[in-house]
Image (tube, rainbow, N blue to C red; front, side):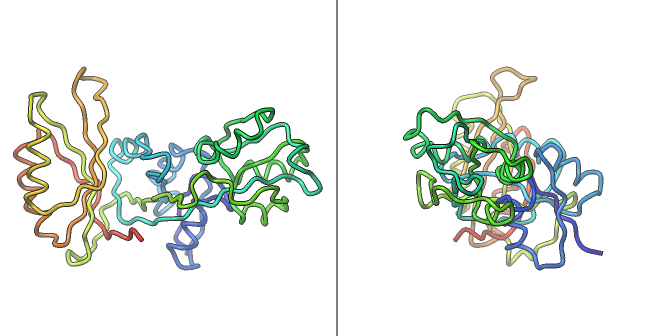
Length: 275
């Protein structure tokens, strides 16, 4: 039986592209129209693993997805970086001048805003998924409506690319994580990245002390993001990504943070694949 991977979106989406690059051909996909649905697919056992976008080099981290991983006690077991190329596409035979609306995922619209500003008369409509928008245009033969999606989506759904590579920044990359219900065993000598969450006492210098420990233990802080604790005013959870050369350095830092933090949770220990 093929391993089933949950993705946000449909075939032709960037999540689907990650599956094609990260896994061998012996996998199938469960198409989910939201990240909540993706998590439900994984928790129910409908899928074996899931691919989830976690941050973009232009738009920054997708904090709600960190919260979904944390809330549902899921584990990050790997990561994959994908260079994002956005294209404006519509039914064949149309020109940009014929387009009245552009539909796409809000992240895709944001990544292409400088291009879209050139056409102030075109209405921007947020949608659930880039590839699903392309498919709907094809299935319903929607004239006057364009999608922003991948070249693969244009090929799969027989659309014409009116403007290629319209992302504002050419070096536009999205980091995806591979998540699982259980912690996936990775040999310690291969682990050089970790995602953690911690909570601190609300007093002066507590965060600085934690950051000093990370530095002393030779950890490289690649991301830190705070998220308010709704049930406790003025308290925050911190989501942090670190890289390191030796797992023993991270293990030492982890043991110290368990003492210093009011709460510590490891969301994943895995291999850093940043290009």
